Image (cartoon, rainbow, N blue to C red; front, side, top):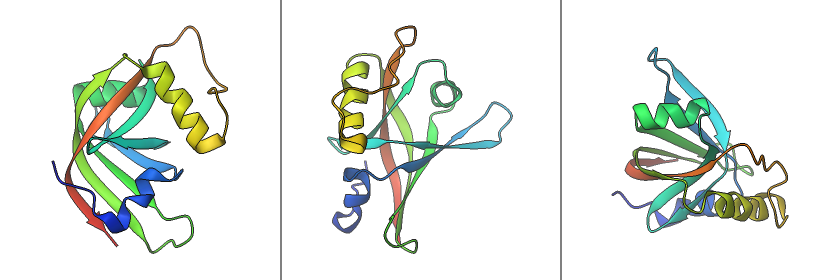
Length: 130
């Protein structure tokens, strides 16, 4: 696991919406804006099971994240890595935590009782900052 440099950690710890690139079955990249946080060196994102990005990460676990500093468009962090683990355990609590971080609310407002939330743990393998 490659550590995130201290001078860029704020881009993954502050409420900065990041771009997640996954690979579709056709080989075409797909980019989605997502919320994230970090735990034990892993970047964690949350999604509903069955969404395209979830399917992509299960079938093709290579991903790239790009965090752009909202106050300086010339400062960014790119993280290339692999999805090391996907779990349903704690998925609902995690999306609530992210909603608190990003929106300042106690509960994610778009909870859907018919969907299952999953946490995807991304292991950084290459980190580039500008």
